[in-house]
Image 1 (cartoon, rainbow, N blue to C red):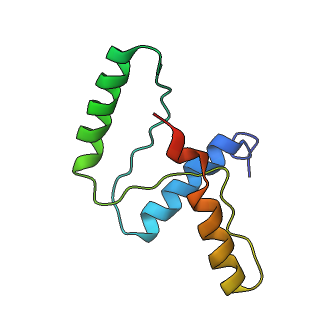
Image 2 (image 1 turned 135 degrees about the vertical axis):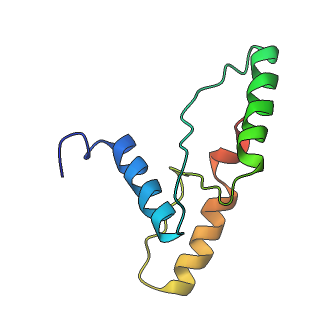
Image 3 (image 1 turned 45 degrees about the vertical axis):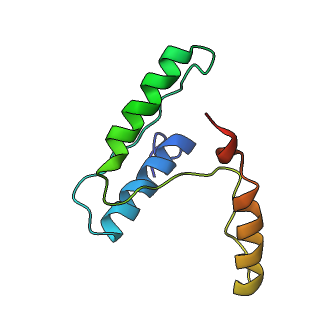
Length: 94
């Protein structure tokens, strides 16, 4: 692994590429923009642009930095994952 590949953002990008390949997708798009939520015009425009971009997507992935999937017992993992997923800060964005 190169130094660039070791960076967290690069790992997420490679992870998305690997998942897209597993899902037999030819292309994938990564959205890394930050939206100024204080500017209502920018927020509205960004939301409309995201809707147009994702509306026709075959698959949509979201990286949730505050959700973990590691556990030795699958049943424990499922319930822990669901609790973390429901409490994720991702749902409070925009």
